[in-house]
Amino acid sequence: MQGHAKPGNVSLRKINSRLRHLGDDLMRKTLSTLFAVFAMLASGIAFAPNASAAASAYGCSGNLVGTYDVRTGGGTKYGVINVYYSSANGGTNCAAVVDTYWGTGTTKNMIASIWKCKAGTVPGGGTCSIDTQDNDNGYYSWYAGPVTVTGTASRCISVWGTIWSPSNSTDANGRGVAVHCG
Image (cartoon, rainbow, N blue to C red; front, side, top):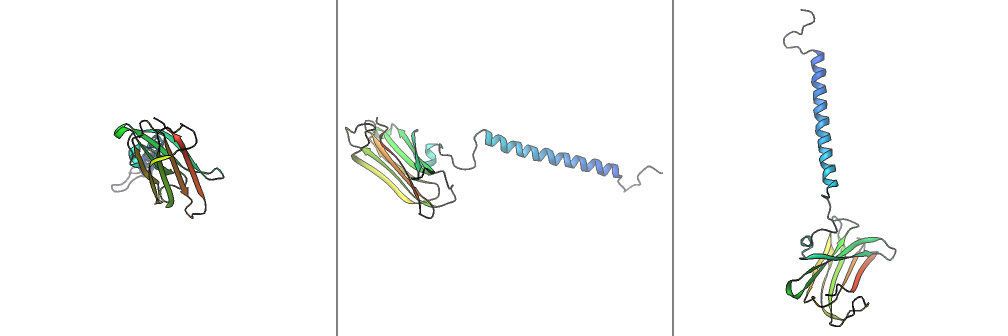
């Protein structure tokens, strides 16, 4: 019975064959997983919050109508102010200040402000006499807001955002003055 395996014994050839199949299966599964992750990233599925996320992500309604960078005096971008508009209530503007620098796991002091300018404000004129306003100030890990003003269908608005570094040693500011005049 030379050349034949005894019952209960497995030949070296069979073991090598099984190991090759296991290795092939493991490689296929690994490549499939990597391909799935790559496909999600390529299709825009993100694992972190996106500054252009839907209004509802920040408690606003309506459509994104503007963004303003929030930068330090040295030009480092800490985040953005997202501004939304809805025709509800005679025109509603909403804003959120979103951290795009440190990420959601880091708490820092943030301010979001929005003002409805008085009638007669010159669009883009650099000044806004405040009619009504809404502010949000606190320590947040992702965004400040939402802040909202209504009755803006025929008015300009102004927005302001501030994000401090987690140590409160540096601040970044952004603004839009007498903008989105309807």
